[in-house]
Length: 64
Image (tube, rainbow, N blue to C red; front, side, top):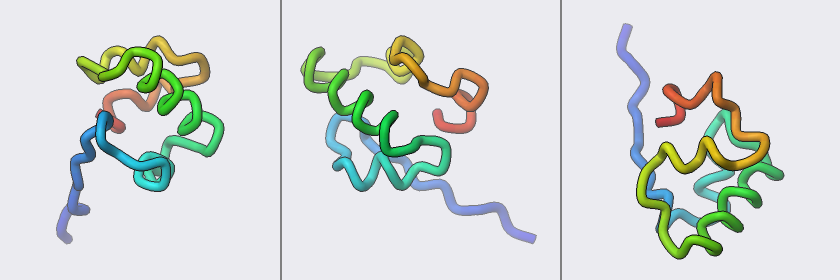
């Protein structure tokens, strides 16, 4: 059995569709992430995503 291939995504350059394609992130959360990114100009670390209301903290390690 082989492990699934993990494709890294640059959160600062990702399109709406690319972020939405992440299994644990739904449409509403995708909108919040991209709005947050627009507010701060650039997300410096994935830890910042924890500040977003509704971000699944229990899934953070899998998403990261």
